[in-house]
Length: 173
Image 1 (tube, helix red, strand yellow):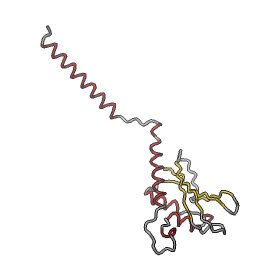
Image 2 (cartoon, rainbow, N blue to C red; image 1 turned 180 degrees about the vertical axis):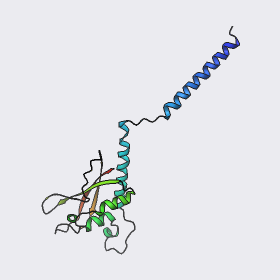
Image 3 (tube, rainbow, N blue to C red; image 1 turned 90 degrees about the horizontal axis):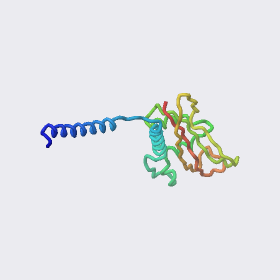
Image 4 (tube, rainbow, N blue to C red; image 1 turned 90 degrees about the vertical axis):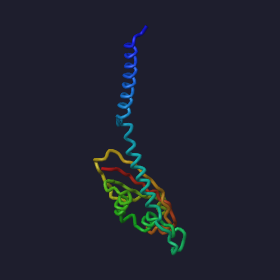
């Protein structure tokens, strides 16, 4: 027959085993190890921020019922700005406006506009920001958005509407 001492050792053994398992579970779940595979999370967050900023810039704040046509009634800041400025003169305020919408002055970006040049029958492009050649950033994310422009002021004499591709390369220093 088993005595009372053996039963006490058995209960103590079960209690110790449960305590060890619970302690191991808590320790293993509380550690956070950042592996190189997890660094893409920052890139995804930066890409989402860039997409949100472009979407906000391409949304009209209010409806303008006094405008002569539907396009001008709903024309966003981005459409208005890209239509009225001459790309040959540069778009330096684009960086400031982008950073203002993002609320982060640490953001660095290169922005380009691509369009079909009807006169030369080829793709044309303009830089919308001063090109920054920073050696401190390892990689960047690219955000693109198609923007419809109705008879842009810098357009060739044909006076046609066009859709341009806006490409922003974005990183943080």
